Amino acid sequence: MRIVLFGPPGSGKGTQASLLKDKYKAAHISTGDTLREAVANQTEVGLRAKGYMEKGELVPDEVVIAIAKDKLASVGESGFILDGFPRTIAQAEALDVALAEIGRPLDSVVNLRVDDEELVKRLSGRRVCPSCGEPYHVDTKVPKVEDKCDKCGGDLIHRADDQAEAIRNRLKVYNNQTAPVLGYYDGKGILKNIDAVGQIAEIQNRIAEALGL
Ligand code: AMP
Image (cartoon, rainbow, N blue to C red; front, top):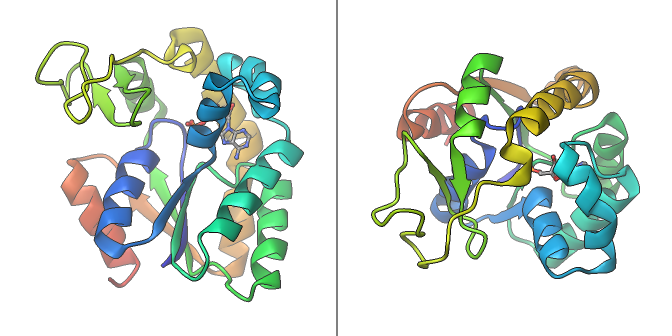
């Protein structure tokens, strides 16, 4: 499995990637998770990325391309699920070059489709465990103990970029800079559009079906 999980913020890329990774033994590569870790550790990359992320803007291409290449190099021969990368045409082109160099091109790009109203609802209610990355939601995935992660007991947070103003900006950025990447992959004949509204398991089945799994 060598795929990109594509879609606007809040479309469920992280949730679906995490299920696919366990089921099909593929590496989950999330540039967002790597960047958040860099911010928490105050690395050079983290310090550079922090301001962009808090405002819901894209981190410069050269920073995320370097991260993605590094992660891809570390997965070796195993399959991979890219989550949140590429987000610009320049990133998509750089990814193609990197994968061509190792002779492991993408199988498919899965586009998770959700309308804006539903996205705002999902993102504003989202909570996340900063320690293990497990996502929660105030209405649809409530932790057993209030504000504590079921998996590792960490304190759940409301991400700065899941606050109202940043959400609006992230959706604008998605429509302007990221959505054009869909045309790029459609032109290559590897784009699979999925209705990503419904139960998590139901959406997972739709993805598996689209991938012929
Ligand atoms: P995510 O968790 O994928 O929603 O990413 C959170 C934030 O990290 C985004 O709003 C961007 O600021 C940054 N980010 C993650 N992936 C990328 C990417 N491929 N290109 C640019 N910025 C990114």
